[in-house]
Image 1 (tube, rainbow, N blue to C red):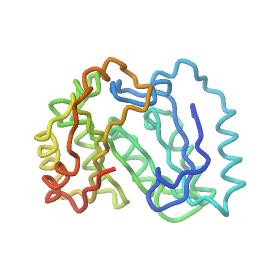
Image 2: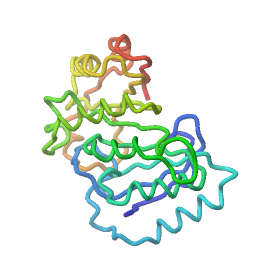
Image 3: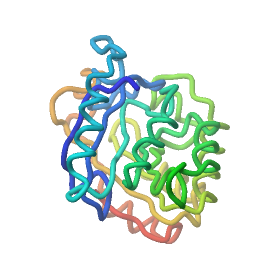
Image 4: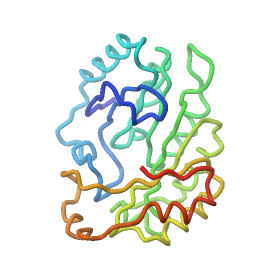
Length: 238
């Protein structure tokens, strides 16, 4: 597992749980608004197992303090040893939350179908999938060739997995319009939870030219939430 960083304690990344977060390296999207350009591009990281060793030592030592692990990125599902990595976490008794962009439904299917070796239940306890935009705008929003059929399949797999989940969209003024969220609502209608996240200019992003495009523009997420709440069990603004 190529790991780019560890957050030893988070009360935010895994809703309702005290967790640690592990950041994987590499992504198959190039979203201009991404706040983790180093992880996406991965140029300065090697496949060293030093951070992985440190991570598992952390889990061993904090069994009485931590409840779960959030695996994020980058895009974790492009890691060839992700399933084995999750098995090791589950063997230590932790809950696992996976963040994904939904481009690898084959990996999700395997994760949903397999069980931990040393415990009951499933390999995953929670999945958060980023919905980048309406399907017609996926390529432009991610600056990548996006196979939208794979995105659709991942959505269906997650909704029928039997585990907890949420879909979420980072709302970017130059990339999204209010009507896009209505279309997303109709697409995901009946889903348990949808989260709207405001894009915040916190400094470094993958494409710095985006900052000029969004300057002075704003999306009213509370207004959007009210407009689409009928499609979901719950809509949250974060």
